[in-house]
Image (cartoon, rainbow over all chains, first blue to last red; front, top):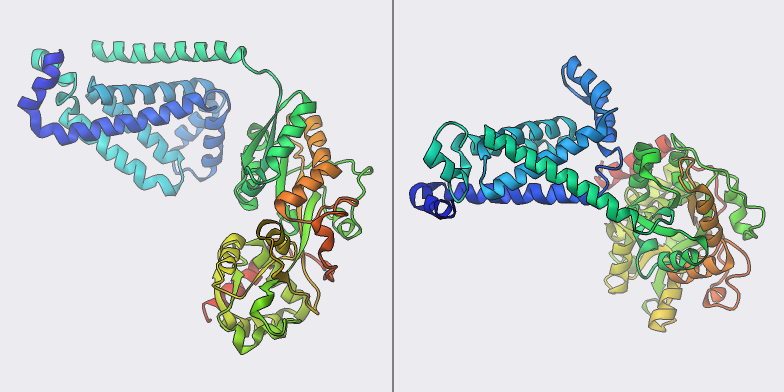
Length: 160
Length: 344
């Protein structure tokens, strides 16, 4: 697996700039997740407050609004744990280049959730994130300088 | 797919373990209650009075004092409204008299018992205005270097002299409290129409409008301008730090506006009893002395200034606080001021 990690540069070296972007994005998510873990994201209802503030101005289907109001806000601790876990998953996956394709789809979903809940000042940022995650999934960004190359070589399929 | 699920399982398992470990290690740590004090950066910085108050309070309270930087009063109020009890503010410091109306919209404050506090006579007039309590104050005036003038200006009209053209820096009233004080003082003195007529001419005299007091005062300190609108206590800073008596605050025939800084305990406090004790320390003679010396502002209680350099400040005439304009009225005035600046 270690050999395959570097061998990938030889065979899919044209993806090297994308792998740089992947590692950078992974590092960004790692910083975010660590700040939340060390802060009070899991112990104080920050998530519930954020949703509560955004709800009156949200342009979302009624079923989603009801879901946020009746499920997410009362169970904010479960959802805070899930969001933090998924952020760690994205960061580690992107840095190692492992299971990047399915994780990029999760990244798209998470960025979409942030896009809906954050103010207009972050709109461009999260739209760009969705586009980058999409490109990561489309290309299979873990195949260059990543563990995905090892599995791709042996198993093929859409997961790598 | 199997690899992906195992990967997710490992991540979530790891996170769960990390949370459990963190909780276990936290339970062995300091269990004293935490008093959260929201205040302006100048108050909590190392040269402000915050560190001394924190140290003195922690000696007696069996608690920890945690300062939160409130940036400016508007942001502070937004945070208090949106976070409420979850924000955990026990004491809030840093409003001026023009923030009082906003501070009472949607935020409840605890009524404080102030019978034992010997307030200065000039401060008593603002005590009845709100449940918030003043903790320092000062009059404002134009600060100059005596050596720059052969004859010192004595009234506002003296500032229109040709030799002061481009030599005055003012604070923007939309972003700075002294700037707003000047504008409202002018309106109080002259009436709105005449005040804006005066401003139209006065703007021609200005070097610039600075976004904050510190920027304006910086320009004055670097001798890029001859005067700026500041606190009558500012010369004390030069006396203490530079040993210079050249900087003085002008004594204006029209009198001087006053700025009071207020603090309070929101009704959503978690450690309310500690919060009240902290405010009592702020209003004690020791606390007031530190605030006076670090913030370069007057104390609100009697018996603190005596025997200090602050006692040498001349007794300036205070323009009595008239009705404080409502938030909407203030917005209208500021829009009018902005239109004048744009030359409309």
